[in-house]
Length: 79
Image (cartoon, rainbow, N blue to C red; front, side, top):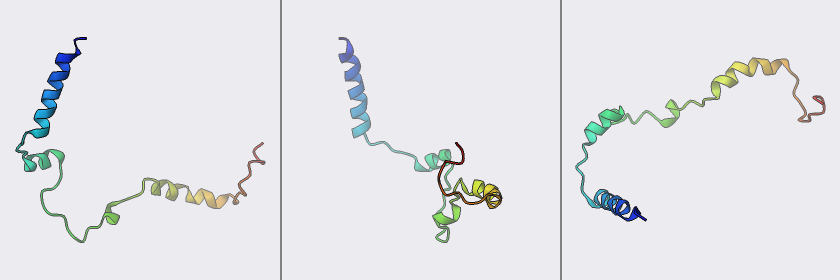
């Protein structure tokens, strides 16, 4: 018991957030998030900016892979 008042307050706040019209300053939000305000260039594609985090590891250890023969997938040599 005693939860009724707190629950009623939460519902009141939730209704206010859901149904009120808030004048959001999008320029201020954009500046706060650090997103550029200008239009993006059409020549920039998402593929140009994406870099797989494992690319660096693959490049680093590719030389080591050449030193070892390919395995057949069995673990019998380790046991």
